[in-house]
Length: 281
Image 1 (tube, rainbow, N blue to C red):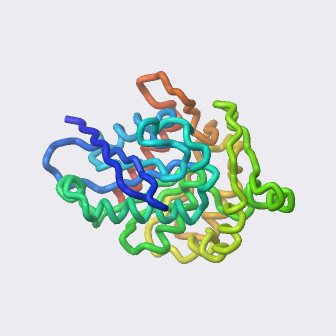
Image 2: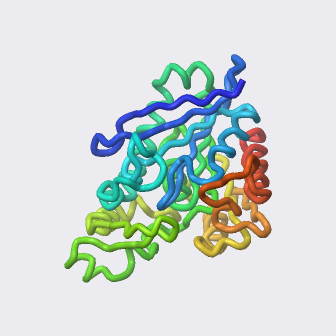
């Protein structure tokens, strides 16, 4: 029987991280998979719940969570009711949050009972792909890593490389959310934190030193994160596997909300490739 359990743990600056765990309740130890959402994302976006069920039905213990400062709350984990938290987010907080989730997996009795925590795979979508790639380099507990439409350069993102003087003067930069129409703040601390930690945030450095199996999946028609970024990751880590999904956009043709009972064909193809990779390694 397919089971989903919800948990709340403490993340960066004592803000909560909401987690769900999906698995088949059949008394077998399963590979553990942790999924990290991307920028302006959340764990229940679009077809991610269908993806979780697909992984669980294939025999994985699938864990997804909201970063502590993604703008969601315990009461409203979907969308962005807490824009102040969003504005105070940064890359190192997300790295820290992922560490909290991994630590929790190793300590939590539910996970230890149903999952083989020593067979741990990280998947990151978009910005989450960079967070996963850096964590896979830093944390020896991670045995496999997957970049799903992942970014290859955090320092070159538009939020950190343009309008710096005005950002410093006003203390905040706004980016419109195309779907919710919210003006989403980025406080100047984001820039300061990124520059202060630029060595650690160097994705090329992390990826080039990976010693574990590394899968890179990217949509052929991704206009948000260009396919060149996937090719960069593959170039920096020649032992990696690069898979290009034809006719797939940045979210593999899903949308939010996703009303269908099945994943779009392109996301299903990506899920199949990820499951094959986990089983092969």
